[in-house]
Length: 539
Image (tube, rainbow, N blue to C red; front, side):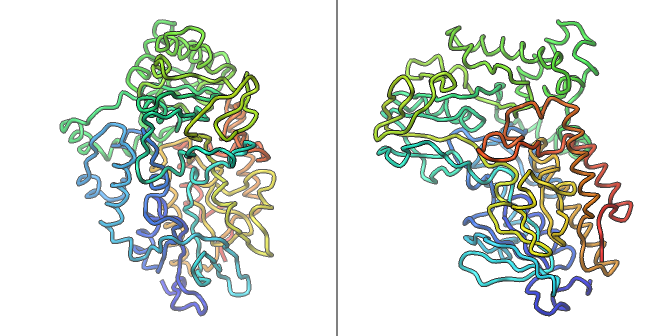
């Protein structure tokens, strides 16, 4: 291991600096220790958990079943941890994160409340210089960016916001102390996943709730429930096979594809298949029910018609139901949501939908929201406006590679990576679930685990072969970016006006960022490794 050891490298403080203490950062630290490498994690928050620490808005749950939204690298961990609900809520997921930190004694190598500001490569010494608030510059041979895909809230750019005299909240930065909306007139701006989960709970408390909707989302009932001991025991007995199936599945979750085309079955059969997904709260399963659902406009229309009918069943007012049904939006190209009584919330007397696609917001005033056709008086504002997804956290840090190459300049027209793992001219800098990998189009824990293990295997290979640096070849990176685009363009995804495309952030390049296909991607990664890291330069 001497080739990589900080002790053998003058001027290097530690072998690996990891940025972020969410799932990726914690597991990367654990893997570094197994390799005998010194490592430290720099985390801007006061706790482990990443997204699950920062997000704590009412109703927050994972949209992957909890028994699968968990690590598989340690069999004892799998067997000792028992989830209590089908779709775990934020407090339980955060407890799981803390359990991992405690079980593997990770905190001693994590520096909390330390926001990294710059990561710069020193070519003369072949090391990275990392700067952070409140910390002297630190150096490392390797840097792993475990900054997460959904961690930087999108800026709220509505004129007059600073004038509002009521309370203002953002779902991505919710207070640790629970908020009580009793007797309040509340406005929620946004109708994506966060809003869909929070709105039913806020509506139960508020004197009146106004939902400001520009773009409606498709949502399935979560059908959440307490997990029975027999079910949990069965999952634990079969974890090996469940995990293996998930690793090579298109979306990283075991789910069947019934036919190559929706038109290979009759309408009654198709409806029965859709019902099985909808009535059992399985959004990922619905996306893969048929091979052409995400590739053919005609095939996708059958799912659009089906979900529109189900929304109409849940909303009493036919005119209101039509406003809640997405129009001109392909099913699955915007992440399908799960909810607990979301559509039914609009049947309440104290809930009003404001369609800002037809009646836009002009400004925020001292006392509420000014629409084109009038003012809505409010005591509280809740912004559920989403994230600067996938690239926001990385570009918030001043990252500079060889020759002073700035990542923000390299990505000015959209992110360019080699498999979402590395970037050309940024040697020994790794990204966990970076753009160009499945990440947000998968079970995130599974994809994070796969990335960390690929990086660890790469470091092990470098130890054994005496290599000091690794980075992608520019031509290989270009080929990967082209491949990501070719795969995406064979589907309906690039035609969606979604955050997958950066469409939610003004000025952000319109580029489809994730890779489509968890299983195919894993196979390609394995082939690269087996071929001696084909497409990468090791020196």
